Image (cartoon, rainbow, N blue to C red; front, side, top):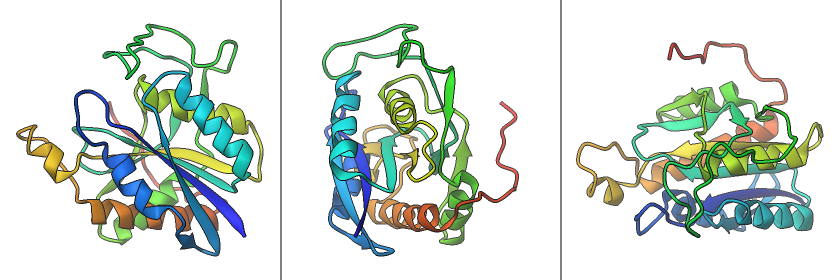
Length: 214
């Protein structure tokens, strides 16, 4: 049976939970499109997060790797288009590191594009009645670090798809951030299941607008 690797992060930035792991762990051992899903929690730490991720990829030989992270303040499911080769941390990671203008991978390309059918995934999630959009930036914190490192590891392999999705706060988190948007865990779970099915079935992305003006 083919394997899908999906990852979420431990809490960071003073939060007691991370919605990515709270939802992703519910997919562990699920069967989706005749594939077994394996969930791994990543540390919110520069360097160590990639060590854990790379070990999981080497052990599982997945056909699809989907990393998921928290984007507090975003209101919808955002499928990331691109990761850049820059670590520039506004806050320290969970080990106290705060790199500034450092490369994720020394000597690596300036950017890696997701190998997922990003726009098809957004369309499918919207068709399921869940807000979703293409994101043009994964930031410069550990989420971008993981997305870039993941795509750099996969390189130009055509047999393994990989990419990153950001999700909003859970309602219980947003309660501590007045005015911040949130999304229920069950809704996020449905979105991720939809995203996985679409990623497995669609090889050539659809051509529809998904750009941004700023």
